[in-house]
Image (cartoon, rainbow, N blue to C red; front, side, top):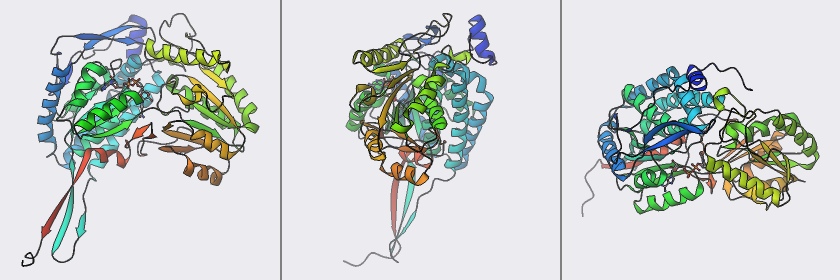
Amino acid sequence: MSGPVVTNPFALAWLERGELPPLPTGHFIDGRFQPPAAGQMMDSFDPGFGRTIAAFAAGDAEDVDRAVTSAQAGFAVWRKSTPGERHGVLSRMAEAVRRNHALLAMVDSLDSGKSMAEAEGDVSGTARLFDYYAGVALTIQGSQIPLGNDLVSMTFREPVGVTAHIVPWNYPTGTFARSIAACLAAGCSAVVKPAETTPFTALIMAQMLVECGLPHGVVNVVTGTGTAAGGPLTEHRAVRHVTFTGSVNTGIRVAQVAARNIASLTLELGGKSPLIALSDCDPVAVAEGALWGIFSNAGQVCSAGSRLVIARNRHDDVVSRLLKLTEALSVGHGLRGCDISAINSPQQLARIAAHVDAARARGRNVLTGGGTGADTAHDTGWFYRPTLIDDLPANDPSVLEEIFGPVLAIQIVDSDEEALAVANSTDFGLMAGIYSRDITRALAMARDLDSGQVTINDYWAGGIAVPFGGRRNSGYGREKGKEGIDAFLSTKAVTIRLTPPPAG
Ligand code: NAD
């Protein structure tokens, strides 16, 4: 079997003996685990073996209502907390995440299917997010507006209230952390609905927050399906802000529901992000950047570089390197550290396969991959081989539609103008990468790209201090960075008359 030596003790216990670490089974409401009101449970799966891990609570509207009531009580306490108290909880949480790194990384990898390296990176990022927003909690302040001698006005930046967080399955730990850390720094309370295939790290982290001193009720987690639990949560009249991360279609539905309650909304949706290799690019750097741009987390990344838009003079060199690197990747169970880990669900695997089969049927040039299965029969779960599809026209569904799997669509261009037009030609606007030896040329293109973020000469360049979000079908609002706190704050202006009002 391929992949690095397994050192994580929880991973070893599962792989060798089928033993699990203790996993929570109820919702987390009012500071403790509680059984679902209707007593219904559902199963979570290990995508690497395609077999059941454990049962968790299948929530419904009654559970959501209990959680929102708890969050209302939590808000009444937390909104009055001092910046120092918020800083303290978030800093302690960062340390708690570090102490529990092995457990969180294993559960994250096991539940989502992602490779252990990816999960470890996400847990480390989660600790840094709590550190970062611990700092931001100390910096929230309003302003003073001069209005002449008679009046003075000032603004208070106040928490918006109870917030809802709908989290997808591809980064269950980091996505929970980025919205919850900012929400708590602002003084809001929360009800989180993790994806139905990845419920566990949100439950574990909610309990850790209480152990770090967060008052009961401030963070609640209701597990279950999008329809039975997510719907009632986003529809709840007491929810003042919704942070939704997921697909475009669900995002549209959530936006319609939030509009009825005039709740504010952050939408982090899908992407079809281009990695643009200009005619003066370094072919070695592009091949490496494109490889991990698309194949990180088996392509199940909203900001994956799922299109390579490449100058014709560099195409053969880059694509032959990329082909070699792709064919050397290991495909297998994430806990064993394989390069291409499992696809999160059989439904998602079927969607990916259908996309590539349709491209083949259209006569497209599938250079490698294009099939299911891991390297060894031992890994019986849901795998898709890393796939390259070459020389696609700009109107091909493979370059327009999000596949959300390890499939790279390659488009050849003859000028910077064509590269820009092709890059901007989908409905999405999440991310773009540019590779060029000429920074002026790259910057000129960066200014014209219609996307929320652009990286130059390193597709994944960035960090938690860099705001993240989309344009057009990729959504709106920003998470991470100082801007990540804005969604959770509302400005109140208070104006004082200093002299008696004018007579009459
Ligand atoms: P999805 O929209 O099906 O599900 C996302 C979440 O929404 C899940 O928790 C689900 O239970 C919930 N949900 C489903 N129906 C709902 C409803 N009616 N009301 C409320 N909640 C509901 O998305 P998915 O297929 O699970 O996730 C993959 C998608 O997420 C991809 O399109 C990807 O690009 C996107 N994504 C975006 C980002 C980002 O930051 N922009 C990050 C990760 C994933």
